[in-house]
Image 1 (spheres, helix red, strand yellow):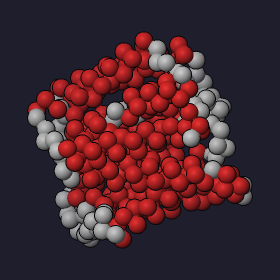
Image 2: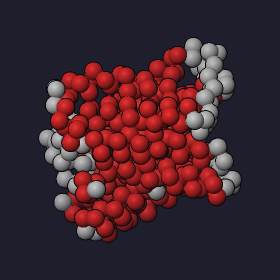
Image 3: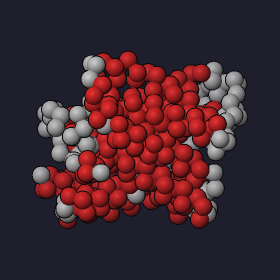
Amino acid sequence: MTQLANDRPVLPAAPGIGGGVLLAIVSATGFGLSGPLATGLLGTGWSPGAIVLGRMAIAALALAPFTLAALRGRWHLLRRQAGQVLMYGTLAVAGAQFCYFSAVATMDVAPALLIEYTAPAAVVGWLWLRRGQRPSPLTVVGAVVAAAGLVLVLDLASGADLAWSGVAWALGAMIGATAYFLISADTDSGLPPLALAGTGLTVGTLVLLAFAATGLLPMHASTAAAEYSFGSPPWWVPMALLGLVTAAMPYATGIAASRRLGSRVASFVALLEVVAAVLFAWLLVSQLPGLTQLAGGVLIIGGVVTVRLGDRELS
Protein backbone atom coordinates (compact mmCIF):
# COMPACT_ATOMS: atom_id res chain seq x y z
CA MET A 1 0.00 0.00 0.00
CA THR A 2 2.57 2.52 -1.08
CA GLN A 3 -0.10 5.13 -1.68
CA LEU A 4 -0.61 5.41 2.06
CA ALA A 5 2.92 6.67 2.42
CA ASN A 6 2.57 9.42 -0.17
CA ASP A 7 1.93 12.58 1.79
CA ARG A 8 2.97 15.36 -0.58
CA PRO A 9 0.47 18.24 -0.89
CA VAL A 10 -0.74 18.74 -4.44
CA LEU A 11 -3.77 20.98 -4.06
CA PRO A 12 -3.23 24.66 -4.72
CA ALA A 13 -2.24 26.22 -1.45
CA ALA A 14 -4.32 28.94 0.08
CA PRO A 15 -2.44 32.02 1.33
CA GLY A 16 0.11 30.58 3.76
CA ILE A 17 -1.31 27.54 5.49
CA GLY A 18 -4.58 29.20 6.39
CA GLY A 19 -6.73 27.36 3.87
CA GLY A 20 -5.73 23.88 5.00
CA VAL A 21 -5.89 24.71 8.70
CA LEU A 22 -9.31 26.32 8.28
CA LEU A 23 -10.64 23.25 6.48
CA ALA A 24 -9.22 21.00 9.20
CA ILE A 25 -10.84 23.11 11.93
CA VAL A 26 -14.19 23.01 10.09
CA SER A 27 -13.88 19.23 9.82
CA ALA A 28 -12.95 18.78 13.50
CA THR A 29 -15.79 21.08 14.59
CA GLY A 30 -18.32 19.14 12.52
CA PHE A 31 -17.17 15.80 13.90
CA GLY A 32 -17.21 17.24 17.42
CA LEU A 33 -20.89 18.14 17.11
CA SER A 34 -21.89 14.54 16.43
CA GLY A 35 -21.72 13.25 20.02
CA PRO A 36 -23.84 15.96 21.66
CA LEU A 37 -26.39 15.80 18.82
CA ALA A 38 -26.58 12.02 19.11
CA THR A 39 -27.11 12.31 22.88
CA GLY A 40 -30.51 13.88 22.29
CA LEU A 41 -31.56 10.85 20.23
CA LEU A 42 -29.99 8.23 22.49
CA GLY A 43 -32.17 9.49 25.33
CA THR A 44 -35.33 8.69 23.36
CA GLY A 45 -34.48 5.08 22.55
CA TRP A 46 -32.21 5.27 19.50
CA SER A 47 -29.36 2.77 19.45
CA PRO A 48 -25.86 4.00 18.52
CA GLY A 49 -25.93 1.70 15.49
CA ALA A 50 -29.12 3.21 14.13
CA ILE A 51 -27.77 6.72 14.60
CA VAL A 52 -24.45 6.08 12.88
CA LEU A 53 -26.07 4.17 10.01
CA GLY A 54 -28.60 6.96 9.42
CA ARG A 55 -25.82 9.53 9.66
CA MET A 56 -23.64 7.77 7.10
CA ALA A 57 -26.53 7.09 4.70
CA ILE A 58 -27.70 10.73 4.74
CA ALA A 59 -24.14 11.93 4.20
CA ALA A 60 -23.61 9.57 1.26
CA LEU A 61 -26.85 10.72 -0.37
CA ALA A 62 -26.04 14.39 0.23
CA LEU A 63 -22.60 14.07 -1.37
CA ALA A 64 -23.76 11.94 -4.31
CA PRO A 65 -24.39 14.82 -6.75
CA PHE A 66 -21.13 16.51 -5.75
CA THR A 67 -19.30 13.22 -6.15
CA LEU A 68 -20.66 12.82 -9.70
CA ALA A 69 -19.78 16.42 -10.52
CA ALA A 70 -16.24 15.98 -9.18
CA LEU A 71 -15.69 12.82 -11.22
CA ARG A 72 -17.11 14.37 -14.43
CA GLY A 73 -17.48 10.94 -16.01
CA ARG A 74 -13.93 9.85 -15.18
CA TRP A 75 -15.03 6.43 -13.99
CA HIS A 76 -11.57 5.04 -14.71
CA LEU A 77 -10.38 6.83 -11.57
CA LEU A 78 -12.75 4.76 -9.46
CA ARG A 79 -11.73 1.55 -11.22
CA ARG A 80 -8.05 2.34 -10.78
CA GLN A 81 -8.46 3.28 -7.11
CA ALA A 82 -11.14 0.72 -6.20
CA GLY A 83 -8.91 -0.81 -3.53
CA GLN A 84 -8.28 2.54 -1.90
CA VAL A 85 -11.98 3.47 -1.93
CA LEU A 86 -12.90 0.10 -0.40
CA MET A 87 -10.22 0.49 2.26
CA TYR A 88 -11.35 4.03 3.05
CA GLY A 89 -15.02 3.06 3.30
CA THR A 90 -14.32 -0.12 5.28
CA LEU A 91 -11.59 1.05 7.66
CA ALA A 92 -11.83 4.84 7.87
CA VAL A 93 -15.64 5.10 7.82
CA ALA A 94 -17.41 1.89 8.85
CA GLY A 95 -14.53 0.32 10.81
CA ALA A 96 -13.77 3.37 12.92
CA GLN A 97 -17.45 3.95 13.71
CA PHE A 98 -18.26 0.30 14.47
CA CYS A 99 -15.18 -0.23 16.66
CA TYR A 100 -15.72 3.01 18.60
CA PHE A 101 -19.34 2.26 19.43
CA SER A 102 -18.39 -1.32 20.34
CA ALA A 103 -15.73 0.09 22.67
CA VAL A 104 -18.06 2.48 24.51
CA ALA A 105 -20.52 -0.36 24.99
CA THR A 106 -18.04 -1.99 27.41
CA MET A 107 -15.95 0.92 28.77
CA ASP A 108 -16.17 4.62 29.57
CA VAL A 109 -16.21 7.11 26.71
CA ALA A 110 -13.15 9.09 27.88
CA PRO A 111 -10.55 6.28 27.76
CA ALA A 112 -12.06 5.00 24.52
CA LEU A 113 -11.55 8.43 22.96
CA LEU A 114 -8.03 8.65 24.38
CA ILE A 115 -7.07 5.35 22.78
CA GLU A 116 -8.70 6.25 19.45
CA TYR A 117 -6.93 9.61 19.42
CA THR A 118 -3.50 8.03 19.60
CA ALA A 119 -4.00 7.97 15.82
CA PRO A 120 -1.77 11.06 15.30
CA ALA A 121 1.12 9.17 16.93
CA ALA A 122 0.39 6.19 14.67
CA VAL A 123 0.46 8.51 11.64
CA VAL A 124 3.87 9.87 12.70
CA GLY A 125 5.15 6.32 13.17
CA TRP A 126 3.84 5.15 9.79
CA LEU A 127 5.44 8.08 7.94
CA TRP A 128 8.71 7.43 9.76
CA LEU A 129 8.74 3.72 8.92
CA ARG A 130 7.38 3.94 5.35
CA ARG A 131 8.92 7.18 4.13
CA GLY A 132 11.77 7.77 6.53
CA GLN A 133 10.17 11.02 7.73
CA ARG A 134 11.71 11.16 11.17
CA PRO A 135 9.71 13.57 13.34
CA SER A 136 11.49 16.78 14.30
CA PRO A 137 12.06 17.63 17.98
CA LEU A 138 9.26 20.23 17.75
CA THR A 139 6.88 17.59 16.41
CA VAL A 140 7.67 15.31 19.35
CA VAL A 141 7.22 18.15 21.85
CA GLY A 142 3.92 19.13 20.22
CA ALA A 143 2.70 15.54 20.34
CA VAL A 144 3.48 15.28 24.07
CA VAL A 145 1.77 18.61 24.81
CA ALA A 146 -1.31 17.66 22.76
CA ALA A 147 -1.49 14.24 24.47
CA ALA A 148 -1.35 15.90 27.90
CA GLY A 149 -4.14 18.25 26.85
CA LEU A 150 -6.21 15.33 25.63
CA VAL A 151 -5.89 13.59 29.00
CA LEU A 152 -7.07 16.76 30.77
CA VAL A 153 -10.00 17.37 28.39
CA LEU A 154 -11.22 13.80 28.86
CA ASP A 155 -10.81 14.18 32.65
CA LEU A 156 -9.35 10.72 33.13
CA ALA A 157 -8.16 11.62 36.62
CA SER A 158 -11.73 11.26 37.89
CA GLY A 159 -11.51 7.51 37.38
CA ALA A 160 -12.59 5.45 34.38
CA ASP A 161 -13.95 2.00 33.79
CA LEU A 162 -11.62 -0.09 31.62
CA ALA A 163 -12.36 -3.46 30.05
CA TRP A 164 -9.87 -5.34 27.91
CA SER A 165 -12.51 -6.02 25.26
CA GLY A 166 -13.25 -2.30 25.14
CA VAL A 167 -9.54 -1.50 24.85
CA ALA A 168 -9.28 -3.88 21.89
CA TRP A 169 -12.25 -2.24 20.15
CA ALA A 170 -10.80 1.23 20.85
CA LEU A 171 -7.51 0.15 19.27
CA GLY A 172 -9.53 -0.94 16.24
CA ALA A 173 -11.07 2.54 16.12
CA MET A 174 -7.55 4.01 16.29
CA ILE A 175 -6.52 1.93 13.26
CA GLY A 176 -9.58 3.20 11.39
CA ALA A 177 -8.77 6.81 12.31
CA THR A 178 -5.15 6.34 11.22
CA ALA A 179 -6.32 4.98 7.88
CA TYR A 180 -8.61 8.00 7.52
CA PHE A 181 -5.74 10.47 7.79
CA LEU A 182 -3.28 8.51 5.65
CA ILE A 183 -5.71 7.77 2.82
CA SER A 184 -7.17 11.28 2.92
CA ALA A 185 -3.70 12.76 2.41
CA ASP A 186 -2.81 10.53 -0.56
CA THR A 187 -1.82 12.82 -3.40
CA ASP A 188 -1.34 10.26 -6.18
CA SER A 189 -4.76 8.65 -6.47
CA GLY A 190 -6.19 11.34 -8.73
CA LEU A 191 -9.53 11.12 -6.92
CA PRO A 192 -10.92 14.56 -6.04
CA PRO A 193 -11.65 14.99 -2.30
CA LEU A 194 -15.43 15.05 -2.87
CA ALA A 195 -15.24 11.86 -4.95
CA LEU A 196 -13.26 10.01 -2.26
CA ALA A 197 -15.59 11.28 0.48
CA GLY A 198 -18.77 10.38 -1.39
CA THR A 199 -17.71 6.93 -2.56
CA GLY A 200 -16.09 6.14 0.80
CA LEU A 201 -19.26 7.06 2.67
CA THR A 202 -21.30 4.90 0.28
CA VAL A 203 -19.03 1.91 0.90
CA GLY A 204 -19.12 2.58 4.64
CA THR A 205 -22.91 2.70 4.63
CA LEU A 206 -23.11 -0.64 2.82
CA VAL A 207 -20.67 -2.22 5.30
CA LEU A 208 -22.70 -0.92 8.25
CA LEU A 209 -25.88 -2.25 6.62
CA ALA A 210 -24.21 -5.65 6.45
CA PHE A 211 -23.30 -5.40 10.16
CA ALA A 212 -26.92 -4.49 10.93
CA ALA A 213 -28.30 -7.35 8.84
CA THR A 214 -26.16 -9.89 10.69
CA GLY A 215 -27.11 -8.49 14.10
CA LEU A 216 -23.60 -7.19 14.89
CA LEU A 217 -24.97 -3.64 14.93
CA PRO A 218 -28.16 -3.43 17.05
CA MET A 219 -30.78 -1.20 15.44
CA HIS A 220 -33.40 0.66 17.48
CA ALA A 221 -35.07 3.94 16.52
CA SER A 222 -37.81 6.20 17.85
CA THR A 223 -40.02 8.96 16.50
CA ALA A 224 -40.11 10.78 19.84
CA ALA A 225 -38.80 14.34 19.96
CA ALA A 226 -35.12 14.64 20.84
CA GLU A 227 -34.22 16.26 24.16
CA TYR A 228 -31.71 19.14 24.43
CA SER A 229 -31.15 21.97 26.86
CA PHE A 230 -32.76 24.47 24.47
CA GLY A 231 -35.86 22.43 23.61
CA SER A 232 -37.25 19.30 21.96
CA PRO A 233 -37.02 19.35 18.14
CA PRO A 234 -38.55 16.49 16.12
CA TRP A 235 -36.23 13.50 15.67
CA TRP A 236 -35.54 14.18 12.00
CA VAL A 237 -33.93 17.57 12.72
CA PRO A 238 -30.91 16.23 14.69
CA MET A 239 -30.72 13.23 12.33
CA ALA A 240 -30.50 15.53 9.30
CA LEU A 241 -27.85 17.63 11.05
CA LEU A 242 -25.93 14.49 11.94
CA GLY A 243 -25.82 13.46 8.29
CA LEU A 244 -25.17 16.85 6.71
CA VAL A 245 -23.17 18.83 9.29
CA THR A 246 -21.35 16.09 11.24
CA ALA A 247 -20.60 13.67 8.39
CA ALA A 248 -20.93 14.97 4.82
CA MET A 249 -19.23 18.30 5.51
CA PRO A 250 -16.41 17.12 7.83
CA TYR A 251 -15.47 14.11 5.70
CA ALA A 252 -15.21 16.27 2.56
CA THR A 253 -13.36 19.12 4.25
CA GLY A 254 -11.15 16.70 6.18
CA ILE A 255 -9.87 15.08 3.00
CA ALA A 256 -9.22 18.47 1.41
CA ALA A 257 -7.39 19.60 4.56
CA SER A 258 -5.24 16.46 4.69
CA ARG A 259 -4.11 17.00 1.11
CA ARG A 260 -3.08 20.56 1.90
CA LEU A 261 -1.46 19.92 5.27
CA GLY A 262 -0.34 16.30 5.01
CA SER A 263 -1.62 13.52 7.23
CA ARG A 264 0.66 14.33 10.18
CA VAL A 265 -0.46 17.91 10.77
CA ALA A 266 -4.08 17.17 9.78
CA SER A 267 -4.27 14.38 12.36
CA PHE A 268 -3.11 16.67 15.16
CA VAL A 269 -5.47 19.49 14.16
CA ALA A 270 -8.24 16.87 14.31
CA LEU A 271 -7.66 16.64 18.08
CA LEU A 272 -9.66 19.87 18.24
CA GLU A 273 -12.68 17.62 17.70
CA VAL A 274 -12.48 16.66 21.36
CA VAL A 275 -12.44 20.33 22.39
CA ALA A 276 -15.40 21.06 20.11
CA ALA A 277 -17.29 18.07 21.54
CA VAL A 278 -16.87 19.43 25.08
CA LEU A 279 -18.11 22.89 24.04
CA PHE A 280 -21.09 21.52 22.11
CA ALA A 281 -21.98 19.27 25.05
CA TRP A 282 -22.09 22.40 27.18
CA LEU A 283 -24.34 24.23 24.70
CA LEU A 284 -26.68 21.38 23.74
CA VAL A 285 -26.95 19.13 26.78
CA SER A 286 -25.76 21.42 29.61
CA GLN A 287 -22.60 19.42 30.37
CA LEU A 288 -20.50 22.31 31.69
CA PRO A 289 -16.73 21.92 31.09
CA GLY A 290 -14.49 22.33 34.12
CA LEU A 291 -11.30 24.34 34.45
CA THR A 292 -9.26 21.18 33.91
CA GLN A 293 -10.95 20.54 30.57
CA LEU A 294 -10.49 24.16 29.50
CA ALA A 295 -6.80 23.96 30.37
CA GLY A 296 -6.57 20.76 28.37
CA GLY A 297 -8.10 22.51 25.38
CA VAL A 298 -5.42 25.21 25.57
CA LEU A 299 -2.71 22.52 25.68
CA ILE A 300 -4.18 20.74 22.66
CA ILE A 301 -4.18 23.97 20.66
CA GLY A 302 -0.61 24.68 21.75
CA GLY A 303 0.43 21.16 20.78
CA VAL A 304 -1.17 21.48 17.35
CA VAL A 305 0.67 24.75 16.69
CA THR A 306 3.96 23.18 17.81
CA VAL A 307 3.45 20.16 15.56
CA ARG A 308 2.78 22.48 12.63
CA LEU A 309 6.03 24.36 13.34
CA GLY A 310 7.86 21.04 13.50
CA ASP A 311 6.32 19.97 10.21
CA ARG A 312 7.59 23.16 8.56
CA GLU A 313 11.10 22.25 9.70
CA LEU A 314 10.82 19.01 7.72
CA SER A 315 9.44 20.64 4.56
